[in-house]
Length: 209
Image 1 (cartoon, rainbow, N blue to C red):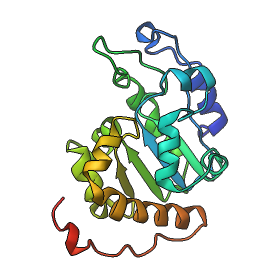
Image 2: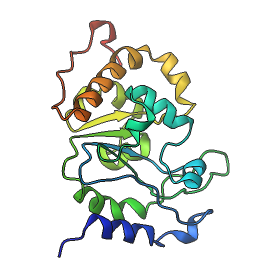
Image 3: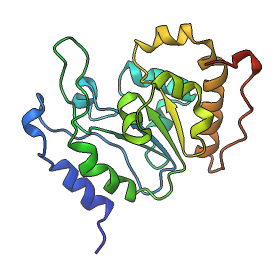
Image 4: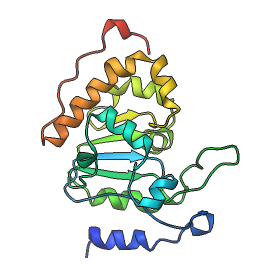
């Protein structure tokens, strides 16, 4: 018999495949349902997410929700929005600061099985370099984000919404003027059960990334 979502989630919660490498131990964090239409593919939980069991429950989540133009209640409505990072558990800190990359064992073990349980996904927000490398292949995050039209209607690449991205946003007015309005229009349409809207072509004012 085919695996059910409940069986898959039980298997994920019991996973020990990389437990020896996790400084805080395994605590997989994801939010999924059979009915979700929008998927947020990110990198891995941080310490606050590990503590609370709620994805993007931090300042980066506030920034991402602002980019999308939605509130917390909508963001955490798993009947419409699924949240699945490349690594489901907190991977620890790098010696020089910042979180470690997602554990490489995780996505190959679980991602295809998770996606098989969500047949109605119509758009995936591919957030940050690790998610983009896994889903889209090698490439520069900033260039992909500005060239988002190339990846529609299936994907919408975004930078990781950390505090470090603020400086890039200030240096890149096209992100606020071109990318974010399109992102919000796509999110509204998908959550309303509609097809993606027609996205206007790039303004000549932003002819170069």
